[in-house]
Image (cartoon, rainbow, N blue to C red; front, side):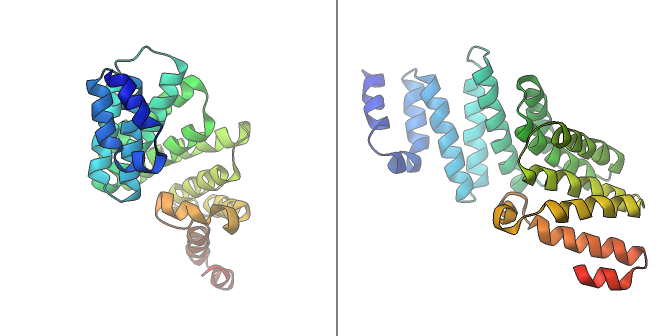
Length: 236
């Protein structure tokens, strides 16, 4: 009866359910409807993320992952875990910072799962944050290695051009800090060429800055280090 009652609530109003998703998740869990409980935990976490309630979001995603671990292993379960791990990573980035070990663990787990089921865009996202993690920690060689893995995926698979932009930026930055200026400039130029403001500007909400603007800034820095002042001014 509890399950039937909750199913009726589920169908009433999507917007209302989003706002009270955490409460519904608890009721579904108590009623033994674990799939719905996971669904509403994920919904509650996403809702919290939109409100910048990152600690609350992390709690919801963590509970959803714990419930998911009790479910039979299927491709669908793996795909749902990838989504939850990436969402948890987004919350942890704000709570802990790019260089936190918890961030590395979440995105490394997501990357390994993506490799199992072949979800290239999500794997690129995982690699993006892993490369950022190592760069912030000062391990430029590891950051560059992971960024090159991103490039390999974007070259071999049909992925949205946005992921190409991400891959080139994170390949160029370690090369710049390692003193490989010409190679770094090549990749940053590739990012500038691939970037489309109309399509990619919203990425600023995902990574905290506009990748097109950032690419021009880094291109200017690199050109300054190469002594090409006039060319640098065209970017800065």
